[in-house]
Every structure is written in C-alpha cells, then in structure tokens.
Image (cartoon, rainbow, N blue to C red; front, side):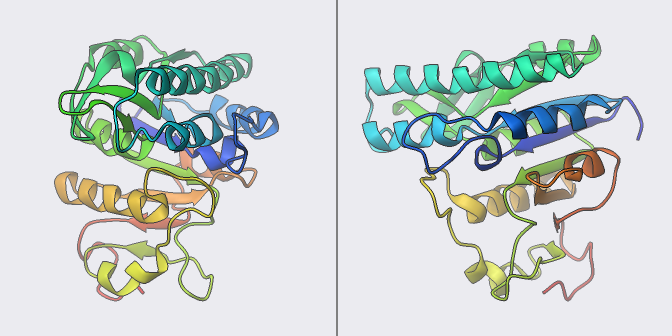
Length: 264
C-alpha cells in the first residue's frame, strides 16, 4: 500500500472490553495482541476504538440518550478516557507511536450527529509519524447539551474528510452473518433490503445501534466516497494483521454493483 494513503482501523468495544460488565472491564490480553499486530504496519493509520463497558452502561445508567445530565456526561467521558489511556499505553509498549485524541475536545454534534470536528491535529500527527487514537465519547451538542458520539459515526466522518483509502471495522463477529450463521461476503444498496432482517442489535448493552448501525454508517460512507469497508473479527489472532496487509477479510460494505449484482 502507498505509504501516503490513510488507513482507518476501528476496534470494537466488544473486542477490547467485557461488554456485558456493568462497569469498565478491559480485556488486556486482546488489547496487547491487537497492539502487536498493529505494530508491523507501515503507513498512515488512524485508530478508533469503541467504549464497550467503559461507556455503554454509563450512558444507559444516566439516560444520556434522552436527557442532558452534567454528572453523567462527566462520568462517562472520564470512563472512556480511562480505556483510551490503556489502549494508547499498550500500543506504545508494542512500538506504535500512538497519541490519544478525545472527541470531547475536538468534535461538536448537532442532534447526535457530528456537526464539525477539528482535524488539524490528526493531519499533523499523521504527517509526523504518529498514530492518532480516537474513541467513542460524550461530546458537546448544539441542540442537546451533550450527546453520545460512537466510533461507528467517527469512522465514516474521518474517512470522507481525510480521504481514507481503506477502512476496517474489527468487531466480535466474523463479519455480517446471515440467518444461517454464514458470513455475507458483501453488502451494498443492491442487497441491503433483503438482508436487513439479519442485522440485529448487540446482545449486550449497546446504545449505538449494534451491527445494523455499523452497516448503515458504512453504506452511507460508500455512497459518499465510493470506498469499501471491511467488517471482520478482531477477536481472532492475525485478522488485524491480515486487514492491514491489504487482504479482503470478513464482509465488504461497498458501493452499488461493486461486487456483482447477487451478493446474498
């Protein structure tokens, strides 16, 4: 891959935390393994990770999707920062020049959707060989006071604004599964209506829409940028490395007709 091209890698909260926990519970073995797989990558890389049990239970506990709450917003933000610090420290221990970037400090939403994000620090980090690490967070919202900003929303926003060449969504599933538990090779507007019933939410506490939310964000991305994203299982050793090496892995979410007319 051209070293000037930008790759965005999202690591799901279900991979690096115990998402069923009522309070933050990190899976350090997974964070360490993934960090080692990332360490071999040569090129411009942006990492976004989910909040998992460091964010979703807190949002639910304080009802932050339906109301503004100072205390809940602060507690949730401080909790996701704690996970981000663990991830960044582990990446640096593996040899990745990672720096934290908290959306609360650089993004503003409007009714739960990103209105603007200050991208200059990301651009300068990439130009100087750093790997910015963003995460799901609480952010200021012009209509709601604060709102939840998921990693699944951050990824397509950055992909469009930064003209990313490759996008990977490392989840806890092999990809998007059909009703028989088989991995769908690709999803586009061509076949989305037929397979939408397969796309359930998360079995654990997930305030950001589960797999359906991921796919909808990535379909919108493919429409706006003609890019292809890959949803794959980051819980399996070697899969992050495979994605970063340029291999097609898991389920491709792509533009209309890019993988043929019958993708089901």
